Amino acid sequence: MKKLKLLALTAVALLGVTGVANAADMLQQDDFVGISFWVISMGMLAATAFFFMETGNVAAGWRTSVIVAGLVTGIAFIHYMYMREVWVTTQDSPTVYRYIDWLITVPLQMVEFYLILSAVGKANSGMFWRLLLGSVVMLVGGYLGEANYIDATLGFIIGMAGWVYILYEVFSGEAGRAAAKSGNKSLTTAFGAMRMIVTVGWAIYPLGYVFGYLTDAVDPVSLNVVYNLADFVNKIAFGLVIWAAATSSSGKRAK
Ligand SMILES: *C/C=C(C)/C=C/C=C(C)/C=C/C1=C(C)CCCC1(C)C
Image (cartoon, rainbow, N blue to C red; front, side, top):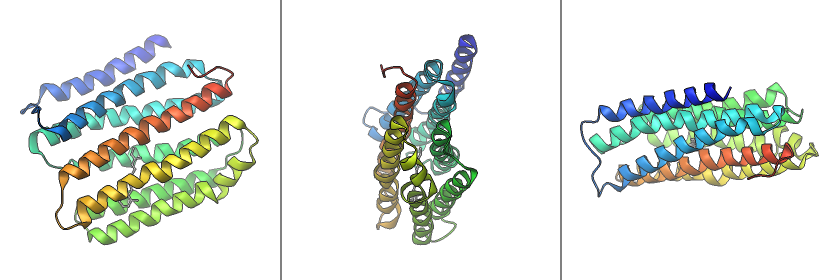
């Protein structure tokens, strides 16, 4: 099992390194957006290694949640390697890679709400599908707007509707009520923290969209810095919250 994990991590790291070898242009020392792409890609790699290594330290019911946390940062790591290349060589927004990443990682994060509820036996499939639907509407709306298939304002409105629907589900919908009634301290703490991330941490993305697309000049510099910082918080901190609940619920102190 240990060897298998190591092998998987090495494969992920090698995939990333191959991207670097093809670089036509190198990072410039005053390219701070490019630097932020580098720093965050390394943070994603470290978080991925950490989450996978920790799966052995949590109770069986929580293991899937911690694995999914590692999948989220691992998928983001690979996309960051590509996004970084696009930025460093063209100084343009890597919109398509970013949205492919979001399209995979955001639904996985929604699944996390379902998984932690299942870890304590409080989940049902309706929650799963509603959270999934909300995230797909949010992202498809945003992409169509950012990639100019539809009016940027219309894309924003569709995206906001998806997000509000997700917030409703985790606060007042069935998932929110199930968490409140669960009677499991680790679960309610984690659920509350994840919900705050989805509210406050996620608010950064529509703000980035507003500054990057809806204001007069499309400004790729501020848009990418904002999105990068947001990903760092929303993927790594989100995973750490789950890991902390998993370890405390498994009777081990968070190290
Ligand atoms: C790891 C990546 C994450 C957590 C990405 C989250 C993205 C969002 C919450 C995006 C939200 C948007 C809206 C709420 C309005 C329309 C534009 C979007 C897609 C940027």
